[in-house]
Amino acid sequence: MRSTAMVLVLCAAARVAGAQAPATRPRIFHLDSYHQGYGLSDETDTGIKAALHGKPVELSTFYLDTKRHSKEEEIRQSVAKARAAIERFRPNVLIASDDPAVRYVVLPYYKDGPTPVVFCGVNWSAEPYGLPNANVTGMIEVVPVLETIDLARKSFPRIRKLGVLSEDSLSEQSNKTQLEPKYHALGLEVTYVMVKDYASWKQEFEKLQDQVDILYLPTQGAVQNWNEPDARAFVRQRTKKPAVTTDAFMMPYALFGLTKTAVEQGEWAAAAALSILAGKKPADIPVVRNRRRKAYLNPTLAAQLKFVPGPELEGAKTVE
Image (tube, rainbow, N blue to C red):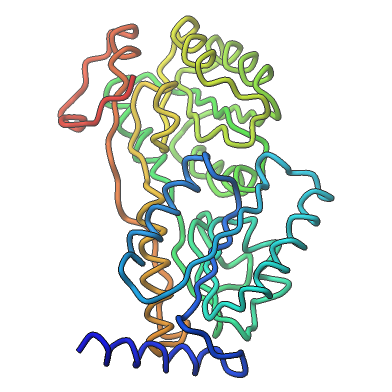
């Protein structure tokens, strides 16, 4: 049975590949927008490898590294290297994780084939990219920030002014466009600050303590010269207002968070890629949204702010 299933998968892959040269095993290429060591990239990679474990496929991964190298010329050079790597590998399916991979590589070069594409981690909507289409499907990333703010209001009912402190990046600019009207709909006055480097992040963090009622800390992957040990100490010294997040790797700097997990994105994308290898077309796989949520609590900051968690945070994972 195992050998029969293997033959079926290989035959399906050959149909997808068309005129490509035959290979021992079907090939999946993962194009990641960021870099190894960045929380979302590592989680996505974990999910992909978990879903492909034991499957008769070959996986290759390339990191665009657009958070640490975000200048247009740097991105152009990385895109050229990515395209060369893709052409050498000749994948049967391309997985593209997060917005930069879709914007800079999928749209101009692979949107209409011949290689089928599965995306994940695209923020809020793929419609700005004209996706999905006959050759591309994927999983949209929806950040549970509104649910997190709603939870914060149960403990801090006087919240009126929200400060958002994040990196200056394509993803965060997209998030700002999508979320700012939603913040206003909640009756919140919003101060949105996006910074390039760690010194600016510290400066703005301290300023916002006196300007807002609550902070939202989305990410720091593109913040240059980030110093994790110093950031942990700095936040403990300077925190006067509650901060929340939606990513587990930001929990050392936040009171609590309802977080998404990029592992889910990677698992889904890899499963979709396997379905395509088995004969499905991308158009046969509907675009979906991420669903998993995990609650986290920072007990050190909770003690500092005299915060008593409600039942919604019962069983939350603690992060110092």
